[in-house]
Length: 471
Image 1 (tube, rainbow, N blue to C red):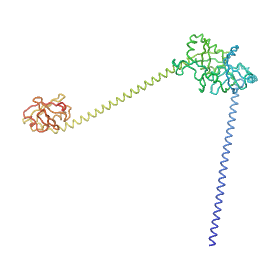
Image 2 (cartoon, rainbow, N blue to C red):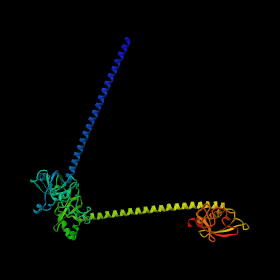
Image 3 (cartoon, one colour):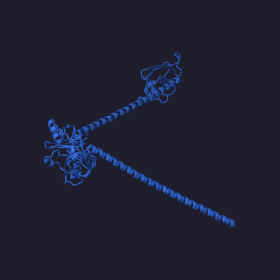
């Protein structure tokens, strides 16, 4: 008994030791896993920080390279800033006799000081790229660096506003005019416009911030313009010389052009908007002190009208194509139906022909032998519906059905057994088919012998086929 207690205690102690060892193993394993997860998170954080540093370094390097390239393109001059846009008018500057005032910015005095320190004047007239958050960009000159303009602000004339946010007062054609209802006329959102604000919102379109950067531009050699409405061609373009003079005056009022710009051309008390479609040698050029060739293409309104006509023609052609396809499909269906009907009729005709052959064979087999000329007989002649004439001798004791077997064995003129009776004209006698009852108008019956039906030996009778529906 004492040994048993000792063994139980020893077993219990051993079990407790194992349990404590297992618990200690699990605790260490848990700590190990926790340390590994913490180490993995730490490595991930370090890798993320490293990637951020590399991205920042790459961005800084790209910015340095961009700045260096821009400075080199500007021949040692660099200026780029984000400024708050505010509207201004070029009318006052034009009234003061300032040339090319239509697209000149007003910038803070500090910007002028910065550029003068870099001797920007050595590049000639100062030009700037102005870009908006909607992706549109244009180029302009500078009217003045004014101490009256707050720091961080740039004043934009209407031409710059038009080019960035669309025309303020588009001359839309009436809705019922050619191209007027289909987007052909009117400016719609201007080049680069994000469409978030309707054109013609006045000063509200000149809001928010814009990027302004100093740019040295090559002198332009060619520009292609597109009028907003066809009225420009009708009024100004009616005389090439007056159109050339009007365009020269308009180009002499600006410092720079950018593809997508809007240029206002005054003539005869009206102002016409023209969009810059193409420039050479670059997408943005200076027009100061240079001779620039100019072409004017069809107006937006005219292009819209022609596009609407082309679309309508395309729709009509598509409609005609669909109608032709439907007609062809119906014709194919009709042809298939006709072919199917013809095949069905041919099949039916073949089945009828086979059936007639079987009937003719069976009828011929059922005929009694034709009596000889020296034997008692009656001579029967039958004219079939098709004009064919048959003649045969029958014995007086031959059944009446033999007459029909004889006719059926020769095709019965296309009539089926049971569809006709045999009649003689004078005296009128009627021989009914075996399956029919005796007719009321004649002397014969469907059963019995020919003699019983009144056909005696030595008699000659001419018979006709009469349809049972014929009376």
